Amino acid sequence: MHLKVEDNESYKYDVIDVNTGKKIPRVQEADDETGEFTLFLIDSNTNELIIDKEKDEVVLFKFKGNIKLVKKGE
View 1 (cartoon, rainbow, N blue to C red):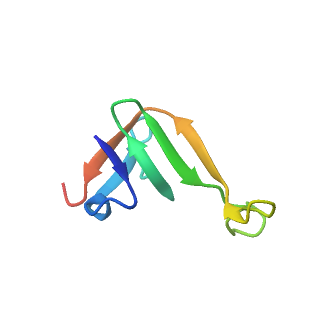
View 2 (cartoon, rainbow, N blue to C red; view 1 turned 30 degrees about the vertical axis):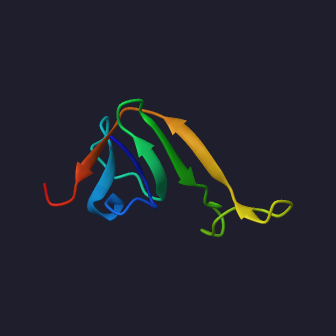
View 3 (cartoon, rainbow, N blue to C red; view 1 turned 90 degrees about the vertical axis):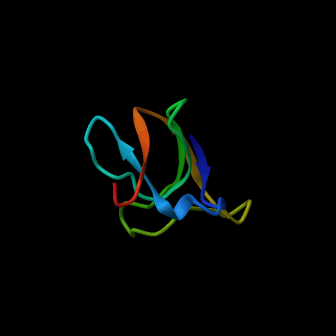
C-alpha cells in the first residue's frame, strides 16, 4: 500500500519499522511494498525542522527499509 500525508485515509495508519516494531515518526509518504518512505529531517541540536534556506522549504529525506503500514487500533 502506498500512502501520502495528503491522502484522506493517511491519518488512520502508522508506519512501523518491522525490525524494531516501533513507529517511525514524521513520515510524509510510505510504500510498504517497496519499503520506501520519506520523512522530514530534524536538527538533533535544536529539535527543529531543517530548512533549505535557498529553496525556502523543509528538507525531506528518502529511505528504504523493512516497513509496514498498520491501521491504528489493530
